[in-house]
Length: 318
Image 1 (cartoon, rainbow, N blue to C red):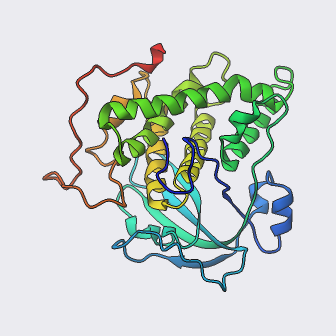
Image 2 (image 1 turned 30 degrees about the horizontal axis):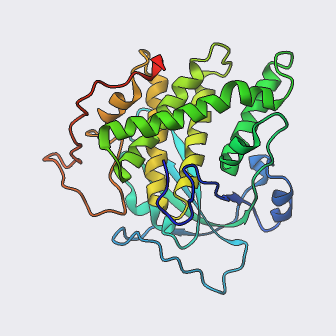
Image 3 (image 1 turned 90 degrees about the vertical axis):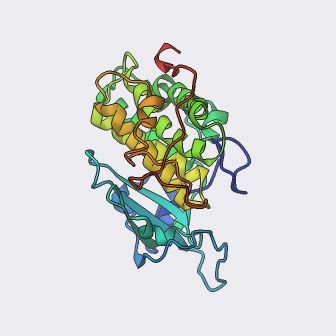
């Protein structure tokens, strides 16, 4: 899953993300990228809605903008779905995320806030973790893995000696496998293009949940696992589409819903077909917000292509 934006030069782009900071806490945030969320309360400058007529980024940064001003936090709430899901993403200013509220629908509502922010670099790889793989993750992915590794260490102090043991045993292979599975499986349905990219977001969230929960020694609860997967797929969406925020929101939304569907699926259904069947209802979206409006079915929904001729792949046998 590779972004088509100029900021991405490899399949899993390493992008410096934005960390919320108040002006007063700016130095502390920079010195401690793993500071608790309670210490990272931003100052809200303004709220934005507006028209969806033109979502192309302006790429213009006024010269008067101070270096610590330039972030947009978008909060997505899925009030029209049978799951209690909320996501937050961070984007640079002047790429269009300020107008996220114009995409509100019965399934999801968006709130955009402009914030004081500070950039942070990548978190160094923990001792014992493959540094090359670790560098392919965004700082937010890295932070989430460390936070949950520490939680598993706290729950089972005599089973794991350090965070790298948890990351290597439970996280690394599942994440690698899920990203590959998502890309390949999405191509079974859509070939190539932005539909494939967006659909892959849903499959990534779904397969990552399944790959985590099916591990013999997995210790997190279903709710903890769902929260972890949503955090990881949200972080991946931010990094892959950092200058195309609406594409990022669609990818992240699909990933969160895919994870929630996997969490409520008692039969371990194959993710690709399960999510594909959810496109007509509007739960999963593959419509690129930067593309011309596609034709709609009589009910007002996007008409997906027919499913692939080949039998659906069952990743449980891989």
